[in-house]
Length: 161
Image 1: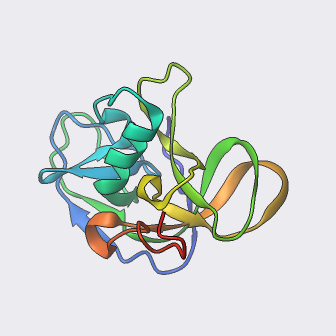
Image 2: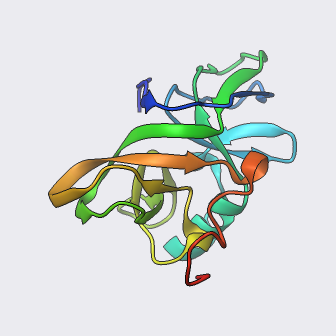
Image 3: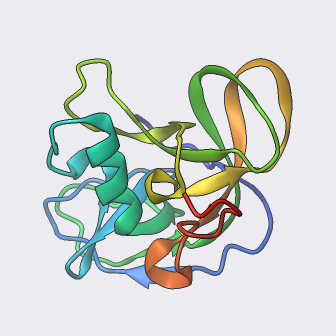
């Protein structure tokens, strides 16, 4: 995927994260913290199922890349830990507050770095829908919450799921 500025509004509360020289990150990638380095969702090892992949990613969710890192680059990048971002998604309707997590590729063996999907519980989520879409939409506004920096969205739902 190519660089795409996905930020739409709200405070981004950015952090500066280290990136390994071999890691490629595009602007707009959902990134997680792997020990001490930011990595795009697509770099996460397959956990065998979409829910397992989403849960592990949500547990380590750092935010959305606001700068790119090409192969060989060693400079740290700025990562937004909050804010409202527009992401591609499978066609679906959305209500305010719906939970969204990182979507998985068609082969079912890797996460997509710049696409989200509805999830059934906060333990899989990286954010909540910030604009209602009563008819099926292929993009959605998401209010992200970094698990690493803000505690994420897990446990914040009224039902505790």
